[in-house]
Amino acid sequence: MFVKKAGNIALLLKIGSAALSSRSTRKFYDRIAPVYDRMFVSHKIHCDTILKILDQSYAKKNRKISLLDLGCGTGLVSILASDRGFKVTGLDISFCSLRLLKKSRPQLAAIQAEAAVIPAADHSFDAVVCLGALRHFHCIEAVIAETSRVLTRDGIFIAGYFPPDAAGLIAIRQNILTTPLIRGYHRLTGTLGYLDRIDQSLEVEIEQQTARNFKTVYRENSGATKHLLVARHPLP
Image (cartoon, rainbow, N blue to C red):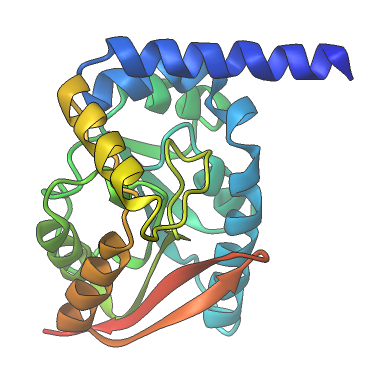
């Protein structure tokens, strides 16, 4: 037990050191790529929920379903979806993360690019998923618009998880006591050079933008305290 706790502390120290010295979102994820999968093990439950939604949505399709994993990181969703038979493309700004993804699954397509300008043709994908990365994007409107553009007309967009945790690890629920703490966290990350929004307005903004770009938007529970946003049928 002590060894496990000591290992977790060491991982936290690596994450903290990267956060304090990176000066950009890309550099931060480049630096934590080697330990990402060991640190963020709680994301697995959201991956399972995403795959359940996708399996139910495309159970009757007799072809491979094309999936874009937006902000794929080292490929937790990408790898699981590929193993289930989806034709996966991973997109991320972190080259180091993409390199680890390709090392694990050489057959997967990997693109280093910004989510606000997806280098893909219109209607290229049946599904787009984005697990935890939306809190880092400066222009939610552009990302959702691009997501809608690259989806087929009966496509599905799954975003999560919500509410977001600080640094993807620490749950801070917004109320009169924690609001100053959240504002301070946003100022700190902004000073360090990257964006990590954890306020409740993030989800509201994403819901509003998806409602402008998709016919149907709803929530899907994922675990005991969190949920995903699901958007179907992008509008022309």
